Structure formats: C-alpha cells, structure tokens
Length: 249
Image (tube, rainbow, N blue to C red; front, side, top):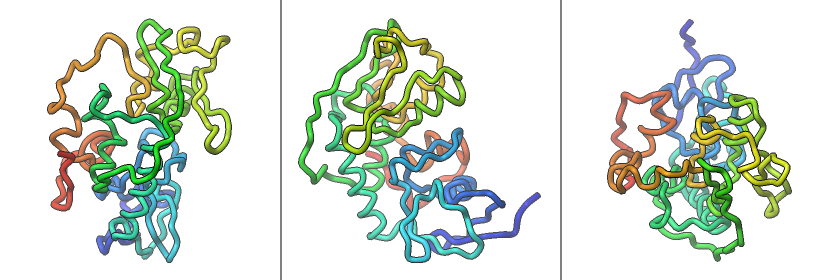
C-alpha cells in the first residue's frame, strides 16, 4: 500500500511509510544523506553521526530519527555540511588513514564521503595511535589503524553470520574493535573470508588477502561515480542520477 504521507528534505517532498526513519524514506526516494555506519541491510546504529540533519531546530541522526508528516529537514545547508566535515576531520585524525597507500582507496566510503562534503584537510592535530595489524588469518587481514568503529562488522557477524566474531570494547577514546577468540587474534576465530562481516567494512580495516590492488586505482567504485549513486545507496535506489551530485575526483 502506498502512503500519502510526506515530509520535505531541502524543500523536496519525500513520501514515507509508517515506521520509516528519515534515512529509510530518503534512500527510497533517491535523496542522498551522507553516512558511514548506516547500511540499509542492518538496523541503524547511529555511531558515526555523519548523517546529521536539522529538523525543528534540532540536530539529529537521520538513520535513527522517525519520519514525521510535514517535517522540514535541512540536509545540505552550509551549517550542516560544516558539521559533517568536522565529524569527518575528527575521524581522520583519530586513526591512521593514509589514502594513497591504502588498498581500499577509491572504494573507501570514508574517503568518498570526505570528497562529497568537500573536506580538504584534516584540520585537527593527528593522534597517530599505535595500533596493530592482525594478519594471523590465512585469508583475511585486519588493520586496526583504519577502523572507524562503525560496528558494521559487529552487526554483520552477529545478525547474519551468527558468529559474534567482532565486538567493541572500552569507552570514548579507549574504544576499540576486539576479536572474539581465545588469543584475541583473527586467526584463532571462526571468521571466514565469505562472511558478511568481511565484506561489509566501509573502509580498509578488514580486507581479504591475496587480492590486493586487483582493480587499478581509477577504476574503483568511487573513482568515476559519486558516493550518492553507488555502493550501499545503489542497493536501495540505483537508477537515478542527481544534478547536485559531487564527483569524487
């Protein structure tokens, strides 16, 4: 049954169904809202806050905020884009993200959202944390330097793979991704290269081995198309191209 309820994003009418979040309705209507921890296949988590929008004078996460009839949503004002850039800048300096040396470059959601929001510099002082690379698994490597704590691998391993291989430990700046195995190493866990948890990582933190740089830079997902029409967005609404899209070049 088609609902006649609508709200507006930047003045554009967006139809929605009962139970929809702003993100649900926006994706279905082909209206892109920048995001990192959200994936249409999983329940929203709201950990990255990059999908921040303004409605009724409040800043809220589009992935968690229920859609309400006749609400007005600001998704692209300078103030909202500046806030998103600040959130992204903090993510970049909190970890060790060296895009030119990363196999995920060109297919990294963090990199693509930064381009989309026109983030030109990290702005803040880099933390340069000392983090491990776990290559103990024969088919998978995990680089904790690149983890943005989006919890997508946690949710995928728990809800799809039914293995609970990953979880987040600690609070605040001490939060970290942990491997559920006797040694804490990936090689001693029951994760498999075919697991959803391995495929869902939006950055270069979890990567299959023996496949590095198979697709050349310049031919990767976000090299030639903006993040707003490819990737997880395309899974929901893949046939429409918007004039306001920003190239990731």
